[in-house]
Image (cartoon, rainbow, N blue to C red; front, side):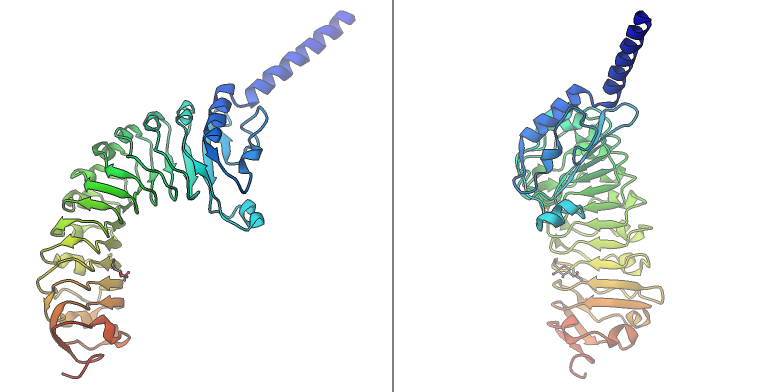
Length: 368
Ligand SMILES: *[C@@H]1O[C@H](CO)[C@@H](O)[C@H](O)[C@H]1NC(C)=O
């Protein structure tokens, strides 16, 4: 009897112990998380207070594990979010410190979001490029400096690379074109210099490429036009030279193209203006010349066309009157001349849309 009871107790104890180890996160993952936490300082909300106890898979704010393996899969720490934590504190997130390379011990990590904490500095640990399962890398809105890891292209499952609103310098690594799952590339508002890799068009899954507000030079790679899914391309506020590749006008799903505030020259490819899928086109503040092509028609549907501050000559094409819709049109600060066409797309426009040209006339400007 005693023996059986002992046997039962021992069995139950063993079962419980096994069960605990299975459900808890591995001590090495926990240690990596604690090292990651130790390099950060979040003084106002206490989000890391939840990072205690042995099981990092349960109730650690922003951490989740793969239910099968109990390995840490996601770190999701957003400083701007709907989370009641922020509402209660009446403030958005703030953190200092840096991103510890200890993270790279988490070799089953699929999501790393450390976004909008304003003051996290230091560099992106180069070893991040060796996290084979990483799908989302989002470090937007911090003060991260240094360069993008040179072998970032090894992350062949990466779908989102968002490093916008930081202080990242150096050039865009050439290996980036190997990210063959990449859908969103956001590098806006950094200090990136050098040229955009000419074979960027290899990123065939990409639907959004935001590289605006950097110091990029060189010309616009025509290979962008090979990216069938590309809907949103923003290269504005850089130092890009050369002409606009005509191939961009033939892109099937491109709906927003912002190339404003660069040093682009040459003429505006006619098919950019006749592309009925393109809804927002900003080419303002470049050195584009030539005439406006007369290619508008009943399929023309623009929420906004801004061609201001260029060297456009000639007259405003009459075909623009037949457009289905033109929300915002800005042709100011060019060398246009002649009569402003009449018609529904023009009825709501103000004089400022046409200001500072050579000799435009008619409504809403002076009569001809
Ligand atoms: C186009 O870009 C210019 C310069 O970057 C900016 O000032 C302007 O507001 C933009 N136009 C539209 C319609 O967004």
